[in-house]
Amino acid sequence: MMLKYSLAAALVALVGTGLTQQVDGAQFNNPTAGPPASYFAAAATIPVAALQSAATQVSTAASKSTYAINNNGGAQKVTIHSDWSKFSEGAAFVFVADMDVDCDGLNHNCKGNPDGQAQTNFGALSAYEVPFIVIPDNFATAYPSEFPGNNLAAVICNGKMFYGIYGDSNGDTPEVIGEASWLMARTCFPGEDLNGNAGHGAADVTYIVFTGSEAVLPSSALNKNYVTNFSTLRSMGDELVNSLAKNLGLVAGGSPTTLTTTAIGSSPTSGSCSWSGHCAGASCSSEDDCSDDLVCKSGKCASSTSCSWSGHCAGASCSSGDDCSDDLVCKSGKCASP
Ligand SMILES: *[C@@H]1O[C@H](CO)[C@@H](O)[C@H](O)[C@H]1NC(C)=O
Image 1 (cartoon, rainbow, N blue to C red):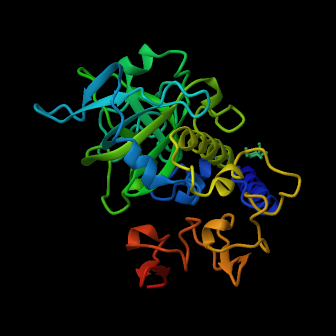
Image 2 (cartoon, rainbow, N blue to C red):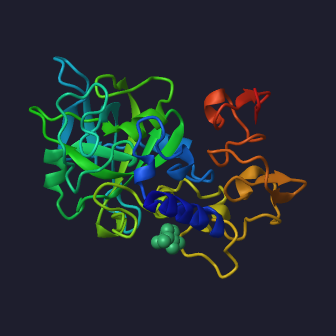
């Protein structure tokens, strides 16, 4: 009864406020039915490819910065960089590594994970519900004021960007780098059946970890087990990434208007969609100008058959099926039904 009531309440919240994804959390504590990717995906306006490329141009090693990607002898080593850590807004550390699955916390006995721990660093997170990332403990503890815990992180995997939090640290001997929760890993690489004993081996995932107390997901959006408001996660993520992209000059000459208007502070005209000024009826030249799942039809944002990855629904540009939501395929450069 209670569960039914809270599910109904969550649905009302969802419908009543556009796409506010406030949840109880427990309903997504499931290895095959976690929160949809759209709950923690970056806005379609984020310059993901440019950020991924910028992450390969950094050069300043952080303190306690170098770790192997696994414990096999001769494993590739990865360095965490501090080049982006001094900005007043959007400051972050960045590294490129593989992605192994961490199930510590509530689901420590997930598939392939006989040696899991029941706790995560700042609670007992659900690896099925929370998109969290793991960083080496020696690195995290070298920067206590930068990493209070539950800091926003942006992960670029498979050409997409997802938001998560720094929820756990790796304390193996020696420590390894490149791990994320079951949910994050399986959302990044849905075709790889990743589990506690099967990671994504290639070091081709970009991890951007934002610093300082202003980058911490607040307790109004997170409890010891679950993210309870994915809208907060996404709006903080979009704001931090936009600040970083501006600092890196990635949006100069691009479309600064669309980027700046995704900031958290919403204008008085918002209310029917999550990106005010870009709701149904607003002028547009492409789907990128429209909020959420809206598409650009005859110069106006309008709803279409919705899909779970906004900006990647039917009609969005694509170069392969990986760019399209759900089971849509890429036909002649546009996402379309198979
Ligand atoms: C969820 O987060 C959004 C964005 O931060 C916020 O506007 C909304 O009020 C939050 N909902 C609750 C119930 O806290």
